[in-house]
Length: 387
Image: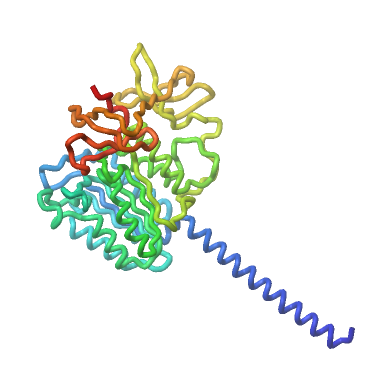
């Protein structure tokens, strides 16, 4: 082989090697972008929070401001790296319709192609009489004229669709009928905005006045959930399962989880440094403790061998106690088959109803002689056999 041939071959090898390196670099960048797409980026997140525990409309029940878990959520978001200028937190009197609209517009206008938008609401949720619209009640709403004075989920969706420049949205709410955020999500999904919904209740159900949903969300985002978890990534699906379990056992309530078509179920909300619950397989379980023949619902908050530290529900001031796990028994979830004729408790009165469908331990029922808008999901604590 002459010298010229060697030079040509070496040159071709160098060019070919360069092309391979360039392709690998592009592949690595693409893979990193795909990975980043499936991981929450707090630094690129814009957040609107509205926490309303009292209203100027005297007909609305107020909530205690003690131990506000919405305030704790704000602190967790800051600790996770959401810039202070990227969060607007409107509390009580500051959460007027005008202020919510103004903050939503301002935050979304600042978005770019890398932005994620997160919305959180706690307070009262209400539906229109025909069920076509849902409102998250702002401080200055008039319950007699919500169409004009309330913040509607349709408005939320349309504003995000019109103004947001990013491609990922997280919608969360701790209130009645919060599952109607699914409609907003589907509106956004159709516009190419991948959306996740986590909420305390279904579209058909009221929600309890407890902080169980928000507290559970806080534990996921802070990496401190009470559960055994061998994986180091707390994904959207893990968060949904954790919230659903807590809402079911603590509140006897069916929570809501919804993803638009392209939102990844393995979207990572929190990465842990170490697995949770090592040598504590019963951590976070809800059980029944029996003392002097009386049953108490408890939750295991710590474990050392067979000894479990339990928290008592509904016993204010009762200290946590260490009990032997073998003395505890699981919650017995009674279920009825689809089509069963039953009676359902509504505000301490029993009404005849029929089971239309079932999801796990929850029953979607329709009351006899009532419109479909009254359909709801109920558990065994509100059901008895038809007499």
